[in-house]
Image 1: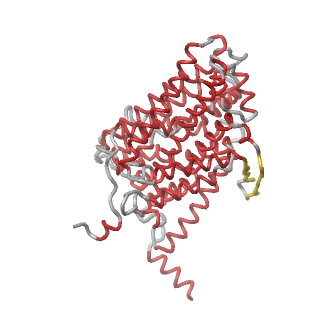
Image 2 (image 1 turned 135 degrees about the vertical axis):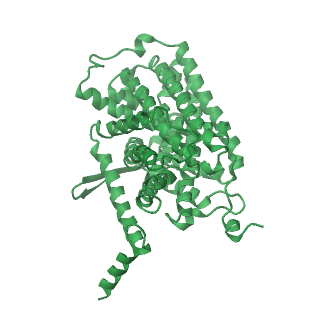
Image 3 (image 1 turned 180 degrees about the vertical axis):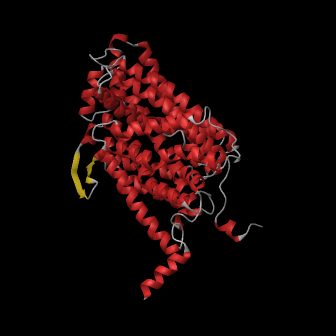
Amino acid sequence: MPDSSQAANPALIRDVGLGTATALNMIDMIGVGPFITLPLIVSAMGGPQAMLGWIVGAVFAICDGLVWAELGAAMPGSGGSYRYLREIYGPKRLGRMVSFLFIWQLSFSAPLSIASGSIGLAGYASYLFPQLEQQYAIHNWSLPLPVLGTLQLSWSVSSATFVAIGAILIALLLLYRRITSIGWISKFLWLGVIGTIGWIIFAGITHFNAARAFSFPPGAFQLSPNFFLGLGSAMLIATYDYWGYYNVCFLGDEVKDPGKTIPRALLLSIVLVACLYLMMNASILGVVPWQEMVKSSQASKLYVVSTFMQRIYGAWAANLVTILVIWAAFASVFSLILGYSRVPYAAALDGNYFRAFARVHPRLRFPYVSLLAMGGVAILCCFLSLADVIAALVVIRILLQFLIQAIGLIVLRIRCPEMPRPFRMWLYPLPALLASFGFIFVLFSRPNFAREVRYAAVILITGLIIYLLRSWRRHEWPFPDDLHLAAVEAQNT
């Protein structure tokens, strides 16, 4: 008979194979990103040379994917980066603080990621129902901070906001079930995503105009400061579009043969999605002039795929592809909530986050509190603009997760050379170093980069304060028991 602790907190089910893992990664990566960000990325670089953003972004995604592949295969448990950072930097010392800060930033960045897909979904719904664009309220908020400068935030309410919220609620309803039922749902959504991209590529290839696709403006490839600023902005958006290849790492306790499945799913999903992105975006640029995309970006009308299909086949095709893009966006929201809900669960089991997040549904056996909490915060993020959500998400995640994880893999190799590693990074340590360089370039090679860096700094500082107060009360690192007792005695005297 199982003991009482097992009965109170039943184990997760290992039922995610390579097919399901790759499908979850791909629908997480694709989602609504490539369907809405083409105008943004073309506007950032001022022409079709923006394709460089996706090409360079794919290289850095593969480099960072190799980091995740080695760590995921070596430590195949739920939680992903939480588990890796804790072990890399020491579970009882610095690693405890670093892993807590990861969970803390995830409380902001994960809902932002979920909300971005939902906001994009609502944006495409506005093509079918223009009345959804009606704004009810717009508010700009600013807070002067010492040293850091002014923290700015804008939020708005429109009919589309409620569509975005509704998408998250439906995803939560579908996810409130056993993981064994989710496998077929993810594959069903994946078919819709791949079918949509396949149709777009076919339409673009059969109506491709090379002169239009490669009508570069004067000085497009001149290596000037403006070129690198534009490339930095384009890579930030491309980074957002590629992210999701690591989703399977958050489900480590539910993956079959994780030492092989996790690396294969990671690398396979990156390569497949990179090929699809390049073909799809080149196809669209061969039909819709890039100058038109820049104007669409400035007017926040990002449903370029609908315009593309209308240009080729007419209104019926535009309406149909809009519905398919909404499908793809919903698939992304579904996959994101599933993956991220397992991370606070893993931290709570370790005693490094709120205890409620460790609760597993007694019958359906999934972390339901974590799932509902992640969806609830994502609903609040639906009131922000898409551009702000993407920029804040990428900067926060790079500073407080990806950089310290890429560097951490090298640290772990030095600290624990004998650790079992079912998969080893190819050309070690070059991919980890290249990924770190790429992240730093994206952070600082953009106009007005300081705005999002301030967000990350505020999250880091508040997280440090919360962690230190909590550790002081619980007698944990960096406060040994004797120092804590001495401080209490000094206070009493």
